[in-house]
Amino acid sequence: MSSIKPKADIKIAVNTRYLREQSEPEAQRYAFAYTIEITNCSEQVVTLLNRHWRITDDNNRVEEVRGDGVIGQQPVIHPGQSFHYTSGAIIGTEFGTMDGSYEMLGADGIRFKANIPPFLLSRPHTVH
Image (tube, rainbow, N blue to C red; front, side, top):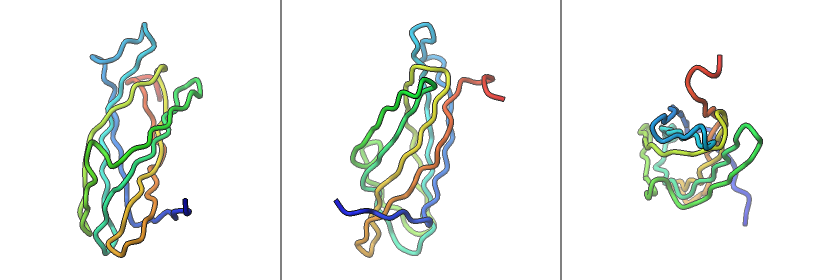
């Protein structure tokens, strides 16, 4: 497999929330939702092909998730436009982090990586 270089013209913003109703702290089950906004700041149409996530709990247990697209889609994002989606993660501790990347395909036929910066998963009022 060839090395896919990262590109800076895709911006990724993340918003997270704790899902109290789906969590069971006594069973060490903490559920979180995350909403991702992917903005195409390039001058060409791009397609999101694959995702790779690293989900790390506060015990340094790492789960890696790889798959086609996101939420069953391989969205096509035009220049200046954004794609939003919401998904979730369950970890065994009150705190955790997620990071990863999307493999993208430009209209020029070149594949590239859009890095997802690390973000925090945390119950409300537990991090100052």
